[in-house]
Length: 615
Image (cartoon, rainbow, N blue to C red; front, side, top):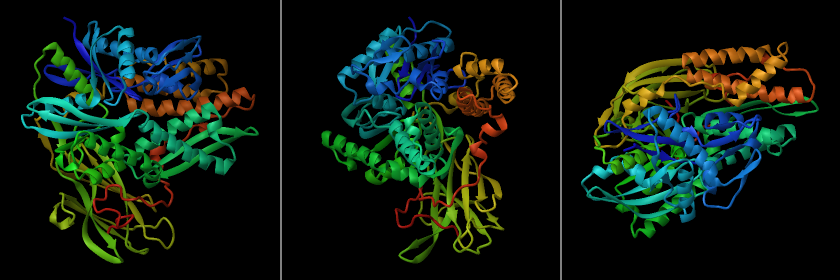
């Protein structure tokens, strides 16, 4: 009998789950564990799916389809090339790619699948999903609700107790919250509520609007009026959103975003996390309204809940955790990678249908909140010995978090950073892990207190790396500490070892990438003018051979920006811009942040102060 796979057909990313030797795992596409849910046709009418389609979106947005899941069950028709497609047909192309990935991993044909849908999906959308699977060549064994799949990934089906849990699923394009009753290993969705047009895409759109206003205020042109400029701005907004999930600031730098009188116009701004929070807060408030509606439909109150599970990549946004925890009175669980939880659960459901045995699921998490000692200002009084959380307990390893802290007064020459683990709001009541003195501080602005960015890097072994950067001088100080961690065996997460074994696999061939094809054509046609581009192509080949996915991503971004600029230059018969002038610096290396205050995204003490000041 052929194997059955589980597929999370997501709005922005899709993934394949499968049970190997009793343990659920993600079937990767070379180094990619989740695949962009994008489809496109290159200028030569070649089909591209996943990352190649995402790469070409910046240059050919009119030939690329994204977020098709939002249109499932509608009569929408989309034109690609010379024909029209229904949403089910576009989704079938994505599912066919999932089929190819599964067959490449398993070494045999795969034609049976379990496919997930939001609990709040309509009947028409569910039927369209089933049809998409059949078009892709699958026998669709079952359409399973995403919250049910997430509960399976957390191993809740193997618990003996009776409890009520809430699954808060905020993905790239859809949101739903489901109230699930667990009774002697049986999972039943009591009530669901949500919005099939709310997710990370909407957060990106808010940031795009903000960036467009900033660009228009500076240059007098609106990048939303140009399809290619808008596509680049959308990509930059998504990258900034992701960065702001772990960093207090994110730089958005897009060179040659537009031109005016043959003069290139650039976007170079920095977004503070609190600015992003303000842009999306009302959208997140809507999810809490849906949360209460689901509880009401189930005839329950927040006090009846035993757990809140977080699913979907957008739950990584710190403000989401803060608002849900405050509203419900429970700390949400994120032990299973929110990007992979649904696919892993779908894989488990597929194994159950196939009658395969399942072993316990193991995962490494940190059991304690990690932070530093700070002082707070309450009603004009200085409160000492307070605990400022940076990294919360039950966070999956590995992880990184950063936050900005300020000195108490303008001429303060040093800050003592004392790192604690624990849950008490009084710092000294927690366990001291270590401390170091940060001297010779320089203020960013004369007359104001100096500020430092404190970053925690926790690896899979529970080794905590602490670094602090003086925002005025750029001075960096680092140390390594040992934080406690635990291994869970109750099925709270897919096996961490399985995930990490797959994480660094060699990147596959990129010959089919439309960006590379276009770059090679330009190099061949204008070798004298495009030596910089030829060098990037050579570096990409070296990075591909070395399997360095991070270097590949960095070089692809440079190539994309350079291509966009050169297309504009060549189209207007103006002089070609050399690589040194066109390629932006790596944003990750830029420490020149503006004077913006972080809003204390990890603050457990409420809104009494905008920023926790280090003593």
